[in-house]
Image 1 (cartoon, rainbow, N blue to C red):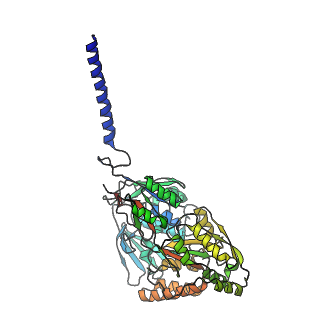
Image 2: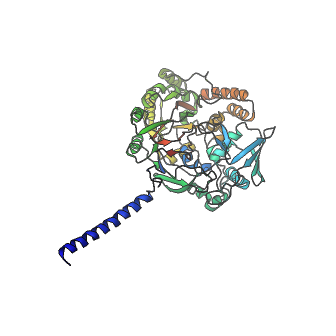
Image 3: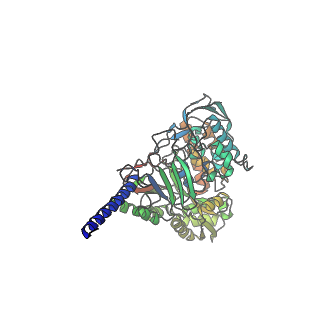
Length: 538
């Protein structure tokens, strides 16, 4: 072969390889990555939600903390739903319901054609099975007959029976009328789990959640991430819009914001209020505001040491400068709390006068109580940011500083979040920082749930007990007249203010931040955000 022919041959060989290589690149590009929609654009199909703490459980019935419900509300569903950004009642797994004239019998018509993530059918028997479990604890799997904490707080012994009166009809019979019954069963803890999965996993259901929701569970790497993905057989074929959601735990607020700026996450909660202006100035980001329905507080365990004395608890209330705390840590996105429930809840008593910041009065009360030189105590500070407390450690230090001015020497203590909640519920703290985001928009969910003697050891972490208060709260549950309920709750708040089992601190406006192209994210006042409608704009 001559040199010219050889060069021509090499040229065609080179072109052939080049065409093959180009063909390979085009084929790879046409498939798209796992994170985009595969339809020729770069619209993401995966959402990474950065949050301040990990969940303690993925069994909604067995927990009381919000980080769990943030995830489970997307895996499980309730008979009744709340509205998109309010606590108005809407159909869920139940399409309709009726109430008997005496307020004792509730009958629900259930949605047909709904599947659990394990392929089993949702029906009336599944509802009965779940309510029996909530009432009896894990008696069927571990022998522990202790009712789950939320069931005890919300219903106690008031549900006489739950019956399947048809394949898709279920009936609840109460011992006494309960004005908030429907709102209670719309709460995150009362979502319906697969009976087959409950039998299969037993008390390990907290690591293997199986519901009917738009997303199914994939994996949980403790203190790192929880992954859920689209349930292809979801009964509402229009949703979810996003194929996969990753809940990423990033405890530090600044680190979490930096992850948003660098694109490692798409959406975050628990931002520092001091960062709001910078976020608003960034065209790549947007701010979301959660409708406020919360209270942050210091709980004073009424069974421990000097805190058994009401005068001491009142003294500590006088020794907290709420305005200074709000100015330093909330940048105006909060208001001082004087009651254990927020002003947006019907029954809020605005006529109550708060304990003013008065160190002299605090010292006077301590002396009257027998502690003229003060005393020593622990103050537990939350290790994770919460909607009502973006930086518990700093707020705790501010409180400790003013306590020391009245002779109360404070040791600030903290634990891992799950341990913190467990030990505080067991009454092991002198004083502890905590808070509450309303579950159903009713005063009962604050006053009875958090401060009634029925709930000591569950949601009443202060171990506070007052028989007069108990009678008022039970009466308010049983009357249907709303004006009468409001008056009862106002009386209850007067008793609580005088007994001072809490130092109410703030009602905050929780803020979140996300990518500018996130659409249809509607933060819910309960803190449990249903993400099935969220999508990214083009």
